Image (cartoon, rainbow, N blue to C red; front, side, top):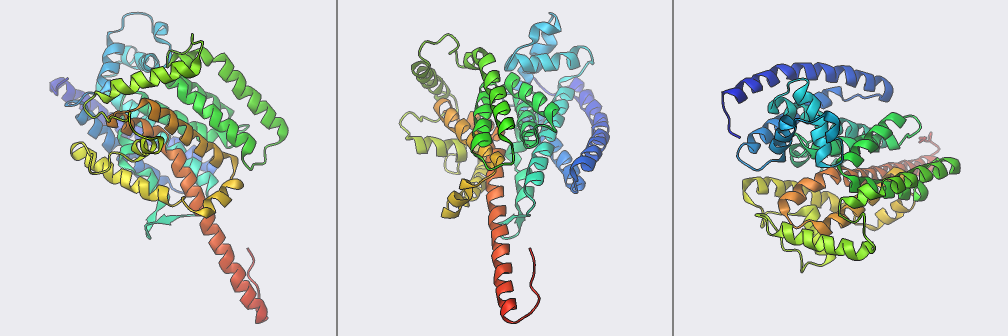
Length: 414
């Protein structure tokens, strides 16, 4: 695909569509503000244009680099059967979603890119709500940097969720799920929509999400009654049983008689195939910690593939510094009484990381795949740092009150 006069006119159409999406954002953000007390509308509007910038960067990147977005558009555009025939999971689901916009509404490749970029943006909005609703403390890192702002504007997170493809939809689905699961009885529609999206785009991710949610539900500190815990557990287990063939089919294990042996064989072959790619990494001789480190933090300067790799390395280095903040004894004390959504987030992150390290051996794919789960770990880090900050404030007040009581001066309450 090359830039031509048709692309130019399509870009003009996209430019005229942006103000419409902006106004639609204002309507939706206003409704969210009434329900969830959002006081950061200006920041979210800046985030919208920031995300659009990465949509443009990805669009230009796709003209000189391999991109699934072009294949998704071509398949849907050239498909001559009935729309319903496209209904399925994974790649087919993206074709199914794209078909009506391309065939019924006449969307060009550029307009489809904008649509999915907009969907990706709303993933960040629900991620923001998930953080703000559950963490009241403002946390600064590196002395002066607001942690939530830093998390919201990580470039790599925006790049891979700003194009036609699985990235935008799965990120939106995961963030909507995280936001909805904290109050499941009040946000049942969000829970259902996000679950369907996650399963349709990545069935194996739905499996890991269910396991993580069950762990948090039963082992996290929360106010959910035993009745709801039992009901929630049964609902999740029933979903897994009903959808097990689709989930196992992702790794060709739906007809397996020995799941463990066949999974090991599949991951070995998949890893070997990916390691032969341009940015492949031979992880066959790596220990498990080395594989996990590679998935989380590489490329890291020395193995950065080109200029873009250096930019990703800078972001990975920041990830490394943030992760280091939880490697202290206080974290284990915090973890013992951590809320359910914190435990679920860490479990989802760890399970997915372990699963990916057995399959991934290509830096490019690792960079892209980890974006869908990094926010779960950022949430754990943010919650822990807010917890520590709150404890520090309490200790200072207690110390002040102790001194004040010895001097017979009024005490401060908290």
